[in-house]
Length: 232
Ligand SMILES: NC(=O)c1ccc[n+]([C@@H]2O[C@H](COP(=O)([O-])OP(=O)(O)OC[C@H]3O[C@@H](n4cnc5c(N)ncnc54)[C@H](OP(=O)(O)O)[C@@H]3O)[C@@H](O)[C@H]2O)c1
Image (cartoon, rainbow, N blue to C red; front, side):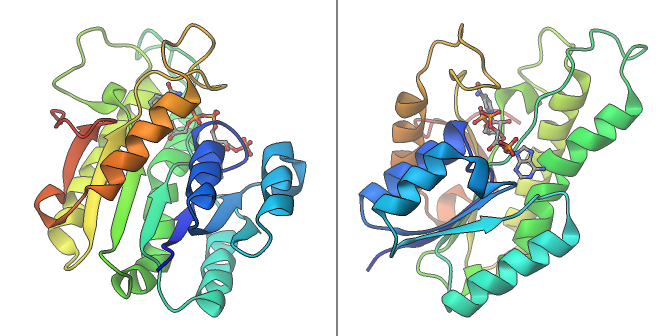
C-alpha cells in the first residue's frame, strides 16, 4: 500500500526533494508550504501527480494554520504513516552571546522547535493510526552538544539542540510510533549554500533509505543521513 506522508517546508530545498522522491515511488504526499502557489517546484509536481499530491498552505509558526492543515489531512485520510518535520530556518551567524538578538533566537525556535512540536501534536493521533508509523525531525549536527567544537551560530544551534531533546522526549512518550532525528549532512540548498559538499539529491536519497529502515529500536535517537548513530 502507498504510504501516507506529511512533509513540512516543501517549497524548496530538502523538503521539495523529499516530496518529489516519495511521489516518484508512488506514495501519497501532503506537502505543507508557507506559499505553495509561489513554488515552481511544487506547482510542477502538482501537475504531474495530481492524484497523490495535496498542497497545503501552512506556516509552522501559526497555530491556526497548523490546525487547519491537520483537519484537511484528517478529512482526506484516516492515518498517516510518516510525519517529516523538515521546515527550518538558519539565522544570522552571531559569534558571541553578546551579539545574539534574542528576538532572533525566539523566531528561530518558533520554526525549528515549536514547528515540529505543533505539527506532531496536531497529527499524533492520525500518526498513531498509521502503518509502522514514524515521526522524523530533520535536525542538524550543529545541535549536537558533543560535536560542538567551535561555538557560534547561537540561535540555530540552540534550536536544533532543543529539537533533539524534543525528539528524545517524544521517543519516551509515544507508544507505537518510531521517533527519530536525522542530520542531512551539509547540503547545497539555500540554507547550506553553494560551498556545501552534498547535492540535495544525494542527501535526500540517503535519508529516504534511512527512514525506510527505522523501527522501534531506533526511537528517540539521532542519526546521520546513512543511519549511523550521532551523539546528542
Ligand atoms: N542544508 C543543509 O546543509 C542543512 C544541514 C543540516 C540541517 N538542515 C535542515 O534541513 C531542513 C531543510 O533545510 P534546507 O537546507 O532545505 O533549507 P532551505 O532550502 O532554506 O528550505 C527551508 C524550507 O523551510 C521552509 N520554512 C521556513 N520557515 C518556515 C515556516 N515558518 N513555516 C513553514 N515552512 C517554513 C521554507 O519555506 P519558504 O520557501 O516559505 O521560506 C523552505 O521550504 C531544515 O530543518 C534545516 O535546518 C539543513
